Length: 196
Image 1 (spheres, rainbow, N blue to C red):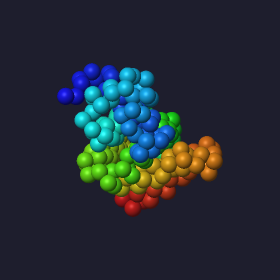
Image 2 (image 1 turned 60 degrees about the horizontal axis):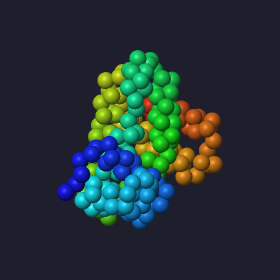
Image 3 (image 1 turned 135 degrees about the horizontal axis):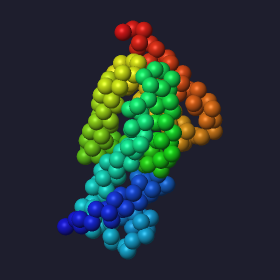
């Protein structure tokens, strides 16, 4: 029977994220998670039915931790509705996601693992689809320039920019990264606005 101490469970899932980022999916064992969380051996196996359960919960947890805090959300709600504001929002997004380096690297490992594990693929597909839908809905309600397709194209472009930053950080410096974010918004949103 799985244990119900939610604080301990979250700590174990967070430890799993760290193990995934550092050692990859093959290194994710209950023993490794226990060690990372600094808990007695056997603790993780008391909280998760099996390794698939741990992988699935790690995938869901990464998305929880990537959500902006209330202060950021409020600042975004009260910001302007022009392209420059859009650029700043996207820079904030790239910076926030890139600052959770281990989470994003773990997510990349999970995505690869999802190609072999249908339950994990299902969870990640639901989370990504919900994230896309929420971003499109927010964008449409915000009055920012561009359309739903522009939002999706920006997500795809910026996700790969984040991968570059986290895996090969010397490819683009911070100034070039910021310029690329601005160019992506200008070109994608500008194209969407002119075709509307």
